[in-house]
Image 1 (spheres, rainbow, N blue to C red):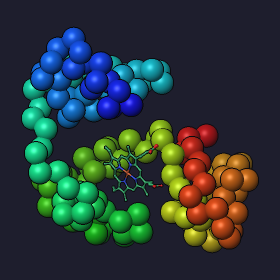
Image 2: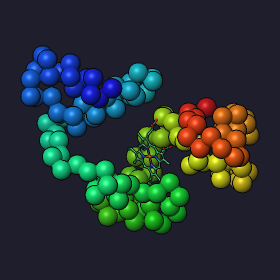
Image 3: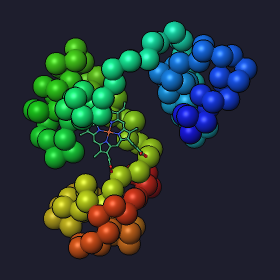
Image 4: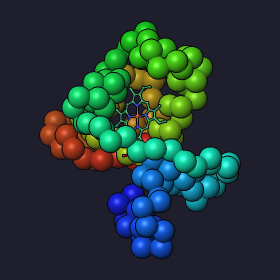
Length: 138
Ligand code: HEM
């Protein structure tokens, strides 16, 4: 979707639209489209010319299996407080997650809303279907 927006922007305004700005605006517009609040997005981000999935991004992303201390440390290393980390994690209110990443919690823990757990189990059985996607809202 970002590529498509970028291609259309390039037609009307060549070499001006930056992908990082498009991501920020798209994030705001997604929240608005879902009935959330709106805010002004300041523009002018520069896209990285050295972005790398393996050298940079994946080594900086916290593991889905990390404990709280590890997650707080990862965000502190980027100058975010624990409170800011929790606030930013609200991004997960929307979107999807793969079965393999929440199966263990779904089948081994009891502190999940039972109706929500039942709906997740329909698309995420205890074995197989690791890449089945489920919405994270209910
Ligand atoms: C606090 C540490 C975090 C952990 C452990 C974490 C973990 C995860 C996991 C497990 C997924 C699902 C990946 C998959 O199923 O393939 C995910 C998806 C995602 N996360 Fe996070 N996340 C964290 C923080 C954040 C923050 C701060 C943001 C943004 C402000 C964010 C934005 C997203 C987005 C946009 C997706 C993809 C949703 C989709 O594809 O529908 N995450 N995250």
